Image (cartoon, rainbow, N blue to C red; front, side):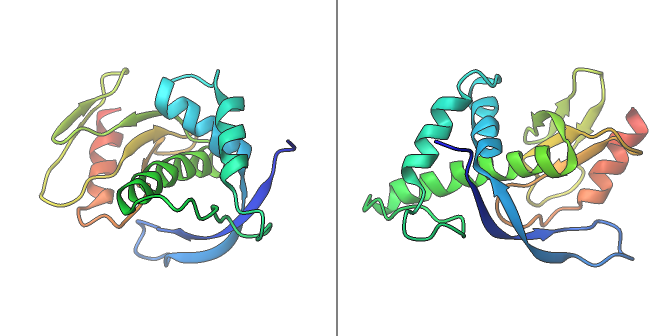
Length: 165
């Protein structure tokens, strides 16, 4: 199967108050999503081909433009679980391909210590992002959220991580 490209409406959140959030139609590489799924589940890209095949089998054959899955006629619980997992893989794949994010570390409930000794602490109530990842640019760290909206303060978490680095 060739590496398919599908499209989705993508929302980009800017923590800088001077720059507004925006949405755009974006090309999505299903191969990048499969790589992200392999890295998320096994911490390696060795099973990318298996994930690519699974996603290829489940992509809608009716709509070849938008990122849509076939109607799998599964129970509501299965569809919800797939939505959560596929959303997570898609978000990680997009952060990797669009921002060149690397070294994804899932954030724990209160404190996460990165391999380089940086400590990320939760400083208020609310949702926390799914990951902190490294990008090669000033500030170095980005927060990644797969689905939903953060009710906490992502900028204060990033400031803490940047100061500790």
